[in-house]
Length: 178
Image 1 (cartoon, rainbow, N blue to C red):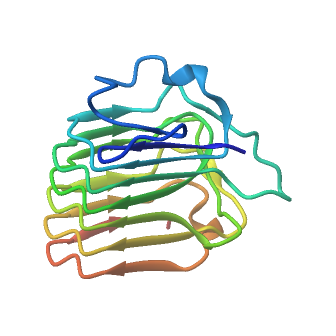
Image 2: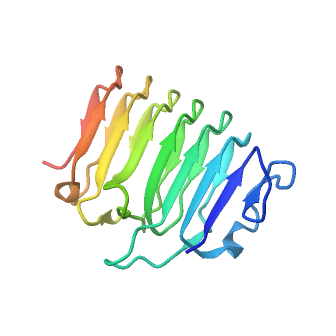
């Protein structure tokens, strides 16, 4: 599927820039996307809740959402879909909202379903309300300097593949299923 790129630095037929868009109104009109890559935008909220990604099947790659180096973003609202998520170097990010009907999957390149690193204002990550984890998707949470809590508690904890939690010096609470 098509990958929608929203970058703050360039303009071509597949790339939008900040002077052209002021918010994410209308993003729901891009249907069946193969992924979304957002980088270098100066927004405080990235709302992808209305996005419709490609339908996931067990033989295909899960659509990836990659959000990196957005210096002002504090809130990310994710779609109700099967996703593969990469968040990197969003230094002011404080809130990631997973929808209750979200599944975490993998893509053909990486086995990691969620990768969150360098989000130094993030205090907690709560993945407890999603529907599940597919195909042993991995979880990587690293180098988030102020992260104190990680909630994975749901009936699907045994479905995670490799779980890597490293270099989060203030992380004192990881909730999992008993």
